[in-house]
Image (cartoon, rainbow, N blue to C red; front, side, top):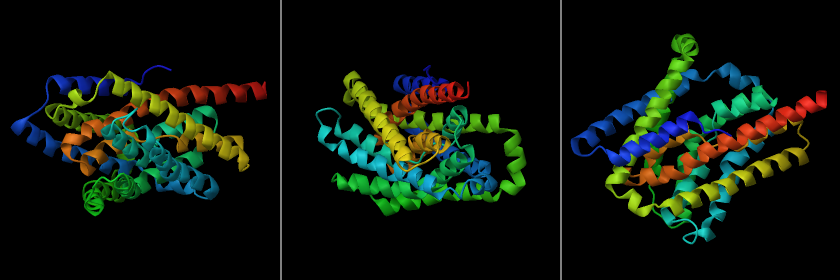
Length: 320
């Protein structure tokens, strides 16, 4: 149940941006650097994606359908059900951040790692998590547009999709097409690639919170707001895990498949969410929009680590 080191670094970056925000010409320079970093991030995502790994678990369509339903249907529905708690429990701005969180694809690395640790169906997890990441590039901006329009907010969905295609999908496809040429190098240097990915995310967070600080984010968000984000995140994650677990059992899935469904269907991707927010939303609002995602990211890692150990212990007791 320890804190994720990368989350601690993210918090440090937010503190630095709060104390030393980039402004003026520096802000413009960092904005251009951020676009290049996001393009590199998604290029590497495409280069890391193995078609063999996707095809290996593709035959388990019922499992994948349930995972995709959890990621792109259940989460958005639960996000809409939070509407009665606005503004009593959460502010309208933070609520939009939760709607954005609910529209995001699942993680890849942590979902597979927890599935493997718990003794689940790893091949199916690789397929589901990878497919969710790819579909999210298309579906997430559409879902964001639909969810925000339902709340009476205005968003240019088509323009957002065009931006996603140009800034995210094009580098992703280019990276995947380049995999036959650079795939071996990428596979051999995955720790280095991971550091590049994390550095890109930290840069986006710094620029986003710098703009938010200049716009007065900490006059709009207090400790009570952060506590409400944490409480709502706990409820949201608990509901999704319980619903996925019960659905897997009632539909007759094996224990290994249940583990895959629980871990792949309950995650939301920080790696995709941070750069996508930078493309979809005005710079001044990105900081607030990312707060629910950042807290939910840490919470999902802590809870799923404990849950994976519990599955692991249950398997050891059954074989003892």
